[in-house]
Length: 448
Ligand SMILES: [Zn+2]
Ligand SMILES: [Zn+2]
Image (cartoon, rainbow, N blue to C red; front, top):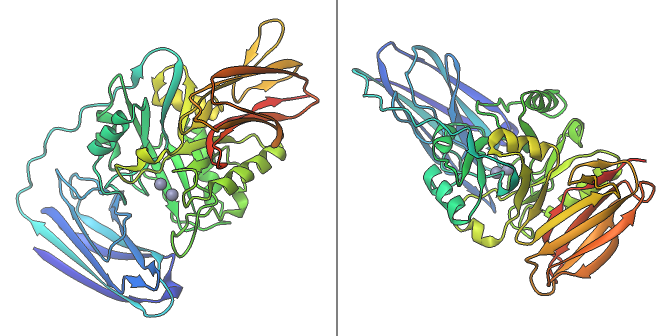
């Protein structure tokens, strides 16, 4: 057994840093245990937040993005603390990195990091999780699902199996696991899908200056950079080149000191190369400030920037699906990760906490366009709806301004002939009698 103890004192000026603690792992290591403790935890109404990221000689080995003033990480050939990757323990220099998400002004933070290395005969390794099903269901259709969710691999209190069960209970067709700064839950996640549920994943890039979902990323994405350095743009471009989706998450959420990095603060990506933005995070009237996020998206559309709007529940607990969050309803060629990502990228989706909406355009020759498409000629807009609650109102917006509104409690359909000169883009909103958003389409664009 080998031991190593590190101690340190941090002040508010050390916030948003990555502090490496190197240690040497010998040839015959069979288990590592790291324990990080720090104090104080609560400061006024906020908490100090330190997390641990682990690197082996080959690179990323896991992260525990969670609160608490004591973090214990165990890692061995067959098992690891959620957030970290089990597997062989290669000898050489490892790094235990303390990420200082929040250090409040006032009393300094004192921490200890204890590293314990057990040596001896390795534990037996069990069979790997069964491989994923690339295609859950053949054939095109509208698929309803969640693009943003968490488990105990980061800061939620439930397992991957419990998340998947919640998705099944809610009747979802797909769910993407997007834990903070780790992909350690994805192998198990993907093994749990079947023909009823596509279990897919990515990562929530949780930087100190903004969060972004990278859907379809199955390996770690390095998040240790600052605004203005060019990294965020490079990551978005690389994600797009690999068929992944880079989505700016909850851009107008509360930020520091309550939620470090939760508000989007990348001036080079307002929206820069970004092609997607999560305008609906969790329940509409929650802490994520969805209404300003929607206004920001409308503003970008009016600048001629054709970003796609997405919804993600950001679920961290089993009750969240009962709080009527927004889901994404996607028209895809089949139910597979690749097809869902392609369809979302094309804007073929609407967002809804309940109502069903269809919004399309047709010309007299029988040609039709759907959400996300561009129309270059006179056409008829068609909206049909059902499942609106009493008092709900459907609204057609042209260039972000109200064109017409009508009560939608009874199912129905409406049509309007339009020409490209009238407006550049149209969306349909459904709002409750208290003004809360219940459903939102992506735009149909017109080019003159
Ligand atoms: Zn986030
Ligand atoms: Zn999240």
